[in-house]
Image 1 (tube, rainbow, N blue to C red):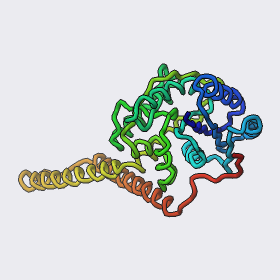
Image 2: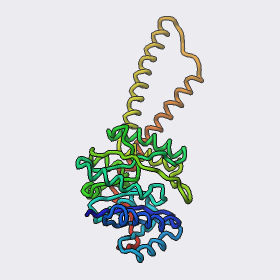
Image 3: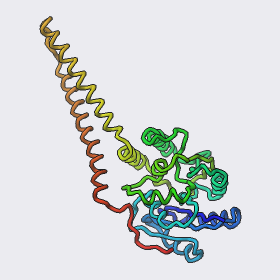
Image 4: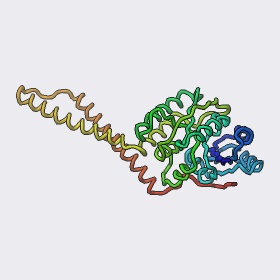
Length: 309
């Protein structure tokens, strides 16, 4: 019999926690007949989530609860939960019931049949996210496939089943603001997708707005790839070579035919474009320097306020 550790980041999920617990308990006690522990990490909720978590902990000692001092984000909350897992396998899932706990046996069955697989990531059938979230996911999948050498057909979601040694390896990484999906890809190439159902959100709305998705994508790019710097470098090289060619062209035309260059508008536009590119380059370099500064400051990814294990 194996022990499964289910790690769930919690943010303003007071209405869903009781149902989440009951469905997870039913899956392991009644369907899989396996041992489990449910690790709930309160990521600075503003509602009564912590009170519900305390009720569940008092009801079932298999429920471990941790409260963070403020909202640090989904991935730091998962990293916090990873430090307290005892299971042979670790499951990550969301708190909004869009990841049906009843799909866990499907993931576990494939893992037990495949010794060559380290991580199983759920691939949603009939994704229930809104169009902005779906577009953001598509762009993120494309970008991470380019940056990390990830197969294009491998979909990264937050519903996963992971072998324990992979989680132990992630814990040892000293990474500022970790992205769990990226760390999994960097840790193992034995990752597969398994199709699962994806339910509609019952309460509230997603915390991933368009601006949040853009921010996360830019962070992923500037922490995992030098592509922006390389792109600006190449544009600079092309611009310099073009300017040399044009300089020779206009000089030759002037000395041979006496033609001078006219048109202040085009000149001003070129100056504005070059200055804009220069400022963009400085901004990109500044972004990388800020990441270096954040790493050097050694600020914690999360701060625990209290816990009941």
